[in-house]
Length: 330
Image (cartoon, rainbow, N blue to C red; front, side):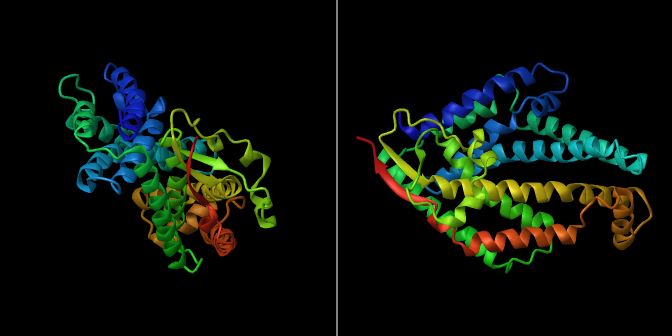
């Protein structure tokens, strides 16, 4: 079996039992949400994104959209569910705000249940998984060496695109979702691909670490299980990433995630107020900060924090030094 197909089958074999169990539940979507269906979906989406650049773009993009729709909807459930749970203990936040967030979470769960049925994710006959596997087996997969060389080029193109995106902002962010969160998504894919390709990407440390990287290599980052990549296994060719620059990438993803999460409450409460109270945008944001109290950092401050750390990280050209190249294992 070519390595490309085996990578997809590896994560499909992790997703299928979760879907099988979900199909027997009264609320399949809720069960998927509570049982980490997002992880294999992330991996399958990552593989689809990567392989759409190697092979039949139309076929793999269509496959990606199927996985992405499930993952995005699970993400929407998580957004409202976590906001409601975090805010329910804040006595200043009115009940109508919590009720709105909980209702939105239930609405997204219902939406996912409809997607699961309409797209045949839960059926045993002619299921979505069976259809995807059939299409994958029709692919003229690349040989291992060619495939890893394609991964090398794919990383280069992804990094170039990402640097262009951040340069377009001049490190002055105005929107948490379309700029900060989107930047984090783009960075995060660079850390998901190594997990998804199941051994074909490995880390290697240069002996002389540049001094500026020390600030990123905290114990929390270097010991994170997310920074331990799958073993090489049967791979003959691997793509090498520089370990300390990979840690720097991980640090950036974590920091932007903290900033995003800090702003989550502001965005969620403002949305709830706009939908449940007779307030305009200005009044809603003012009321939001009153409800969340002085401990809540303003969105403007959070956007500034994101811009500051991005300016340092990208001016150091850390992404440009991430990829070391392809190596043959003797």
